[in-house]
Length: 159
Image (cartoon, rainbow, N blue to C red):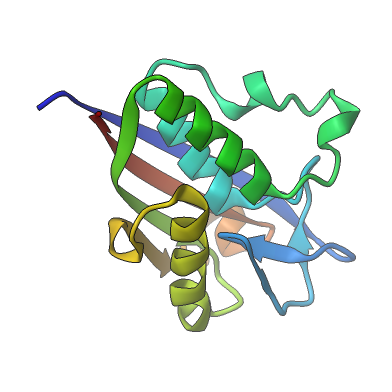
């Protein structure tokens, strides 16, 4: 079996006046993530992992922050485009494993909704999408609630 593994990472600053969107789900919180698009760190990490598995660069190559057409973009739309690229290269997702690191808000109540939404966009089964949430034990910028980050690993399987 021909397989490829990619990993991804993303971090964005928390600010007032922005929505907090993770895995395509808007989560009630007093702060949101700052970025050129909707700043969905989980979806961005997954896209980078998908692209990295095939040595196709990163999301900044396809959706540069200098390009005004991506301002405020829904990351799920971008994810669908990355998935189409991966599929056009003859690959499909075997599974995704990801971790969101945030002190607040508590994300456990939203993990299933994130998983279901990502699986729907990627046209895979929800059980192929793993999402975990943890804190940074109050250490570093994430621990000080200055930002939220996410890590993702994606296994791709040749069609």
